Structures are given as structure tokens and as C-alpha cells.
Length: 201
Ligand SMILES: Cc1cc2nc3c(=O)[nH]c(=O)nc-3n(C[C@H](O)[C@H](O)[C@H](O)COP(=O)(O)O)c2cc1C
Image (cartoon, rainbow, N blue to C red; front, side, top):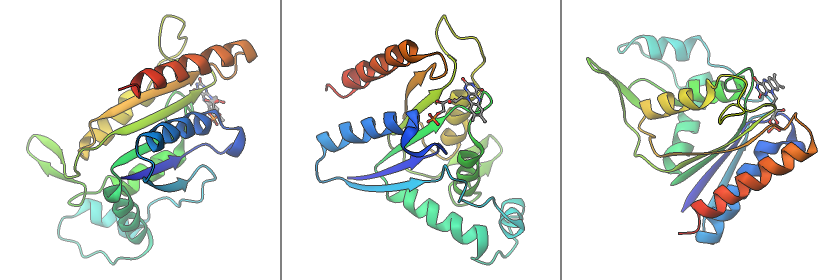
């Protein structure tokens, strides 16, 4: 089994989403000890945004685009994604949605005629479906009765990953990292319990 672990927080070892996504990787490795882990940390902003050459390829079905710059990066990131049997994404909520580094990754992997094709009915995914675990950390709460903000992160990820064929999404979260130690402890144990229940079978 191949696991792709995408880590999107800029906060390194202090990151709560990284902690939670590591927990998920641990569960997966317990189930499949021989699993190969590929870790891609993009939280530092090292992944460049897409360029003009890439945009031309998205824009026109007939344009010849050279395999350089963002097209080459996209080729590599899509191959990495295709090889993965399971994907684990650790991500913060930033401004009610996804951090721009994760959006940059999405811009590279959601690619016309490569990971989706356009039909009169809309986009049709071209990737084999596989489990995608998404570990979210947020300063406030975005779901449940105590939520005080809208959530544009989980519906967006469902829509965009679904458009390339990834529909088996499993969300876990530690919400309220900015609400004090007690809130963080409560959110961590709730997340750990949810994970244990998920991986119990
Ligand atoms: C630029 C930025 C925007 C943020 N926007 C939100 C937000 O809209 N809602 C929220 O609950 N927390 C927000 N936060 C707080 C983070 O979600 C929180 O610190 C979380 O723990 C970050 O995940 P990490 O620990 O994995 O880095 C924001 C943080 C930053 C740096």
C-alpha cells in the first residue's frame, strides 16, 4: 500500500493538523505495516503557483504545452497522487476555507484531460477513487451546535476532489485550537475517539 501524506500547515512541529494527520498515518500503518509513505510538506509555500504555460493547457484543448515549469510540476504531483492507494491531507482552516498552499496543490492536480474531462454534464473525474483522509485544525469551531462561523473548507474539498474522481473522503478535525487549553484537550480527545472508532474495523 502507498500512502501519500500532504501536510499544509506553515507551523511545522507545532501544527495541530499535522499532529492529527500523523495520527491517521499511524492508524493506517498499524493496519498495513509494509505501507510505503510519501510525505509532501507544502506548508512553507515552497510549491509555486501555476504559470502561463500551464494556464494555456487548461484553457485550450489543442494548445501545445511544453512539459516545463508548472506543467512539469503538475505531471510529478499527479503521478504521486495516482500512485497513492490512500491520501492523507493535514490542513488548517484559513479564512473559513483552505490555505492557499493547498489551493496551489489543487491547481496542479485538477487538470483538464489529465485528471478530469469536460462533458456537457460538467467535469468527470479520471482518477481511480481511493480513500482520502482529511485532518483539519481550526482556531474556532466550524461544525456542530457551538460553530460560530461558516465552513467553506469541507464542501469545497468535496466538490473539487470529487471532480477528479476522489469521492471517498473521511474528515476528522480538531476545532477550537484558539479557545484555550481545555478546549484543545477536549477537541483532541474527540478526534482521537473518532479515529479509533473509524479504524476499529
Ligand atoms: C491566515 C490564517 C487564517 C485563519 N483563519 C481561520 C478561520 O477562518 N477560522 C478558524 O477557525 N481559524 C482560523 N485560523 C486559525 C487556524 O485555523 C488555527 O490556528 C489552526 O490551529 C491552524 O492549524 P495548524 O495548527 O495545523 O497550523 C487562521 C489562521 C491563520 C494563520
